[in-house]
Image 1 (cartoon, rainbow, N blue to C red):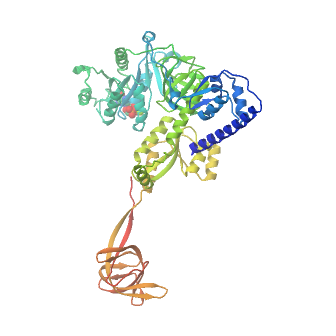
Image 2 (image 1 turned 45 degrees about the vertical axis):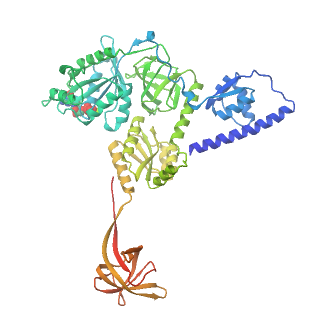
Image 3 (image 1 turned 120 degrees about the horizontal axis):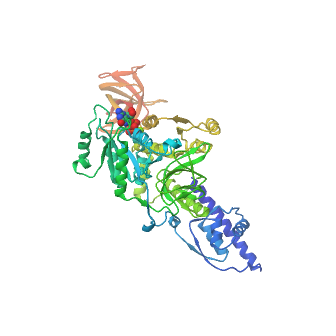
Length: 622
Ligand code: GDP
Ligand code: MG
């Protein structure tokens, strides 16, 4: 729908520009001559800001703005115009145009490979994975305390999705502090992609469990070496040998068995073996020879992003290479902004952040998705160009698919009609939660019912969310967020339901219930009896009445009937409206007895069999 509006707008402005161009030509014929210009070849991408277009034409921005204004298009220097409009402007200014394709805009976003002689060692980035309750959170908490700077500076106080532990020898280790919940596996998977090393936590009293295996697969697919942390060795039932043997079945051979995977016995709660674990990480890092060039424009990956009431959009990013500085212009996904502040996990303001350093970035104009690459770009025009392009691509992707013309397409569409969809607007505290919720809801989808996500994102529920939900006839799900006062009032006025949740399972359960309710119930048929038509009467005002004998079972008033003629069903699913014995209305007639029947249909003949049955609706659940 947004796409349509946009299209219409584009056409309108295009048409008006075209008309105006004609007018301009007419005028010029009358003698008004533009001042001579040097003709250039202007490269025009799909979207371009007015300023950048002026730049490329070697004209002042105001000239272009004035020109557009004369065509009745009011735009500012940083507004984005599409390529058609840009081309008209450029040709009007006497230049030739070279259009470049859509994706060219993306070119150079992440810069070229680092050159070898600029590389410097960087800290390893570590993700802790493992089965639920094996102690991931506890271990991440315990590792924080190994930070030597903690004592002097108050330690790690903020949860920013990642933290760096600094060691006595000046080295550092970066830990991704991603949630270990099963529903977050989507994010965790991305976590593995920025991860150099995976610490696989296995509880010594529990051994290898399903999510342990899942974590092993994640690590493998990310090409990250594994260090096994055999946790909870303080417990009486701890059996590290069992863990080692079980890992063998998943082709993880630890050093003590002649393999090359380090296994360290730890206790997160008793803080045992933590130094050994750090040691193992540093050793593994040395083997990996991790290096990056700090002296270049920064790029990296978004770890998480949230909307903060006081501070606006706050994104935690991990710098992969280069150095991110305050004042840099950063693009992440379809968001961008000038870096207003950089904060570390201790809440300290930084001027810059180098390779492997996780920092909170303030100043982006939205919350990019976790896992989204970010990069510093040369100027705001470039940032706008990139993000405008990405917004468009995203919109096109999420918009209704272009109607296909093939039979397969048509059948798919027809089949689609049978699907009942539950539209939902989902707002969560952090983008990662929103994604996890959407991921879990996707898993509930069947051939018949599914949730259709109108919007999912991080931040409080706004008035525009309510409007959107109203338009789609959808309720709004708030996960650890609330609606603003205005949004609340609007929702009440418009009758849009807002449901709040704090626990993801509750949310999923509820939606599951709703989707189950949307499953069309199965109709179960129960045979009641047969009657044979002996005579047919036409009775004025009533219609055809059949005189019958019940041959089998029972016939019941209000029950369903179908007419069978020579063993073929000729009429289906009327109801038995009138049932009489002699002159009296009765509710049922048993086998062997005669009766008069009247139903919703007229085509009835002597010798027909009337089958009488009930239909029962049986509810189904997912
Ligand atoms: P997660 O689900 O993997 O994040 O696991 P948690 O860190 O939440 O730990 C699950 C439970 O195990 C908690 O009750 C912890 O206190 C406990 N736990 C974690 N590590 C240890 C340990 O080293 N020893 C003992 N005895 N308990 C532990
Ligand atoms: Mg946990």
